[in-house]
Amino acid sequence: MSEADVESLALAYYEAIDAGDYERLEGLLAPAFRHVRGDRTIEGRGAFVRFMREGRPRTDTSHEVDAVYAVESDEEVAVRGRLFHADGSVWFGFVDVFHVEDGRLARLTTYTNNRVS
Image (cartoon, rainbow, N blue to C red; front, side):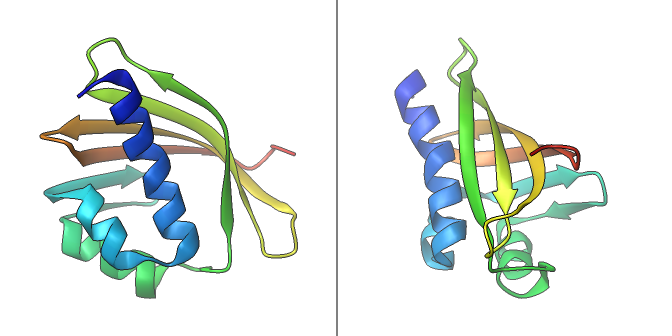
């Protein structure tokens, strides 16, 4: 995949989540998708999509991407942004590092910062 394709794949991830389009989200993820974040690790595409649909503490949020950093290998991309509550206030800042395999998101590591405005 090209750098632009990898970036587009990562941005489509946020669009699908913000729209509540879990079918589209599932299509972006590899079957063995793995999400690592500070409070948990979620193994498998089905488990992740279920968590996003049913287990998240808030679903009325939106992502604002501030920057996208592609790695020369075209297999990784990092995204820096902020997650907003429905009222427009910032919940936290994040950096997501995606690893792409065979045209799908295979791994995601999320880092958060609660002191972002």
